[in-house]
Amino acid sequence: DAGVIQSPRHEVTEMGQEVTLRCKPISGHNSLFWYRQTMMRGLELLIYFNNNVPIDDSGMPEDRFSAKMPNASFSTLKIQPSEPRDSAVYFCASSWTRGNTIYFGEGSWLTVV
Amino acid sequence: TQLLEQSPQFLSIQEGENLTVYCNSSSVFSSLQWYRQEPGEGPVLLVTVVTGGEVKKLKRLTFQFGDARKDSSLHITAAQPGDTGLYLCAGANTGNQFYFGTGTSLTVIP
Image (cartoon, rainbow over all chains, first blue to last red; front, side, top):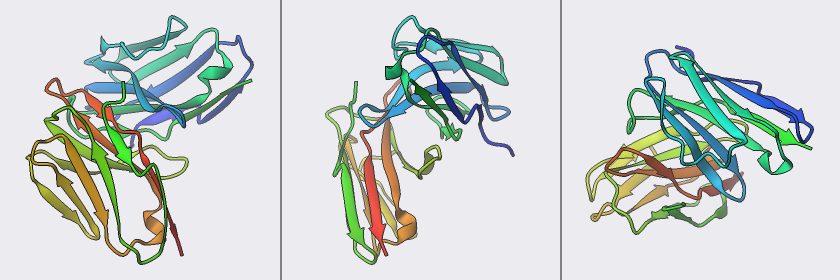
């Protein structure tokens, strides 16, 4: 079975530009998570979807960040406008239900210059 | 909010040595998981512990959940270079929301 698929793997963009990260969860999983990982703050949960509905977005840093899940097989995380402090690795993950094993994608490495 | 503190933050040891990584919190968790993350990859689940006092072994890795379900430890016997990576603990609250620890970066030198 294919794992969680993220794109792009690497992105370098200029400050002020819009960034869109994409995720395809494992088929059959009904929980989807977006995490951000930095050296300073570790792995932080940004938002959690259950059955395509955002349940907990308390980790979203600010209004520049938005996430959507239009169907069970696709989600996006958008940053507009991007800032240098947004540079991090963004992970998408999915699980069968919340509380079960979380399967992570390989991450999207974002650098904002 | 980081509810789980891991120690040590960094660990560099020689191949063949033993080591223990700790994961501590003031909160009670319904379950706790350990993940290993290799460079350029996402974290991968190693084990889930559910019962206070539970001990699980995975080859050279021994995981223990504290009696009060507030802490956990990971012990590696005879470490190998392949054990190198970032070890993350993650605790689940009653709402099944997982909180990840601060991480322990392990380097095993051949």
